[in-house]
Every structure is written in structure tokens, then in C-alpha cells.
Amino acid sequence: MHSKDLQDLKVRSRISLSGIKTSLDLGMNEEELENKLKETREKLGDWQDTLYAYGKYSVLICLQGMDTAGKDSLIREVFKDFNSRGVVVHSFKVPTERELKHDFLWRHYIALPERGKFGVFNRTHYENVLVTRVHPGYILNENLPNVNSVEDINERFWEHRFEQIRNFEKHLAQNGTIIFKFFLHISKEEQRQRLLRRLDKPNKNWKFSPGDLKERKLWEEYQHCYEDAINRTSTENAPWYVIPSDDKSMARYLVAKILYDELSSYREVKEPELAQEIRKNIDEYRQQLNEEKN
Image (cartoon, rainbow, N blue to C red; front, side):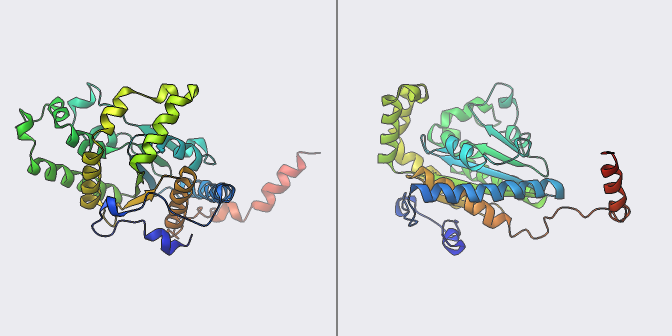
């Protein structure tokens, strides 16, 4: 797939999720996709080593999607060839009592990657304008000033929260964090099939929860909230990519390819040069090491 085609997946203007396909024909079979992914993730792993040596940037990858969208397996497959110390994954669950005593971005801020490293957010700060928007009663657990009932959680409240997210991401980008946001876009039918597989395969049963079916009934509400969040927060410094994800292998390759192509444009990210004093004495150091054989 050409880089130009990949750019078509970036959200640059208002989108309608219902008008975006959940599958894409790349003209490759399963084996070819796996080989392309392997080749790309190896190059990504090498780039991360260089990023660590350069030390001025970090990379934040945000993954969102409906239940069964494939976030866990994508993380496993795309970052398989990274130095384990070079990538840190955070899976954000229901906020803890301690986290609820802080503002909604706090737990995400303290999980940000250090310079030289990749951070992956499996579910992200966007849960605070997705799940909470579908279930506004959850906001009451935050114990916010001037929010005493669900009726206080109005459109103005959400606009403030989106503004806070945009400012948060702008601050990160201005301080050296390269941000990618991926929405794994699956169809309702594909989710149904994946939930059935969880029930049909004994080793996958543990992933199933009756709550999945309750949330599935709210599919259209979630689609609206995702669409609105993407449209309000896809910026030059923190763009959204909508990844057709009915085919997991294809989705993994697309994410890896986008990451590598975009990161490769940072031409200044290079290993630091050796100090002149060390460089001019390399032959001497080599001789010392070779003499140890004798």
C-alpha cells in the first residue's frame, strides 16, 4: 500500500463513520500480510533503538475501538520485535478510588512514555468522552464542582472536556511527544461473530461478559460518540486514523506501516556521534581488546 493511500486513513476533515468501510482490499493474502507486518515491525524496532539513543522524543500510541476490535492482539503483533524496555503498555480500566480523587487526565499523564520510549494506551483518555457520554451517570463518581446530577452534564460540559483533551495533547506534542490515535473500525456483524467465537472456543470463554451484550445494544450511541470525538479532536499534532479492522491481519499491518512511514519523516532522529576524543582513539581501544586474547 502506498504512503499516499495510508494518508487517506488520516482524519483531516469531518467524517461519518457510517460512510467509512470496515474492510479494505490491499491485494495481499494472509501470508503476504504477515510477511509485510514482520518486515515493518522489525524496522520499527530498529527505529525505536535509534529513538532511545537520540533521546529527545517519545511516542504515544492511543488505541480505541468497540469491544472485540482487536486492540490486545494488535499490540502483541505490532510491537513483537521491540526491545521490551522500549515500549510500555497501559490498559486503562474503570478508575480507581485514588484516580477519582484527581482530574480525569491525571492517571493518563503519569503513564506517559519517557523520552526515547514508546507508550501504548490500550483504551485511553477518550474513554472519558465515550463511555461516560453513553453512561453520563459515571461522571458523578468524579465528584466535580457544579455537577450534582446527570442534568448538569450538558453539551457545554462535553465541549469543555474536549477542549481539555485538545490542550493536553497540544502540550504533549509541544514537549516532544509524537502522538498517534487509531480507531479500530469494525462492523456490528463482525463484532457479533467475534463474540460468538468467544463463546464457542473454551480457551476464549474468559474474555466474554454478559455486559458485552448490554453494551452492544448501545452500538449506535457509541458510534455517534466515537464519530463526534474523532471530529472534535483530530489535529495536526495529534491526528486520528480510522483503521478498517474487520480483518485483524490487515489492521495490524496498516497501523505498523503508518507508524513507520510517519516516524521515518523525523530525519533528525539519529544515533549521536561519538565524541571526537573517543573516535580518534578507536584503533587503540580495538588493539587493547584484541591483545586480551594473548
